[in-house]
Length: 78
Image (cartoon, rainbow, N blue to C red; front, side, top):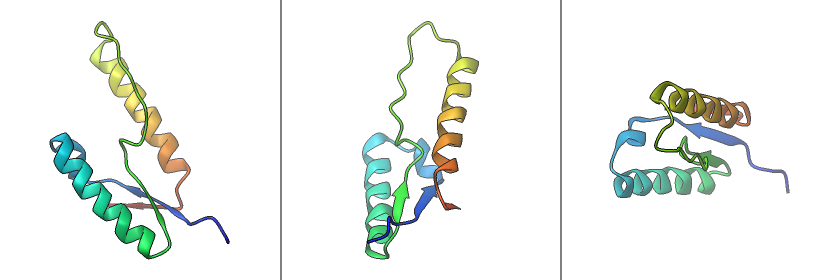
């Protein structure tokens, strides 16, 4: 069986409270799975930040992680 195409799920829910974000993304991923795809959430990375890490540095690490996720996806969707 071929590996399902991955779809990057960009959307405003990334800024929602954790529980709401997780519920929305879980439903998006379920719908995609039912259609034979794999949904990839921008928060599917395990980034950890130290308290003394500057905001620009944090932002750059988030950018890099999301670029990597998008690079491994066949489709970018909102």
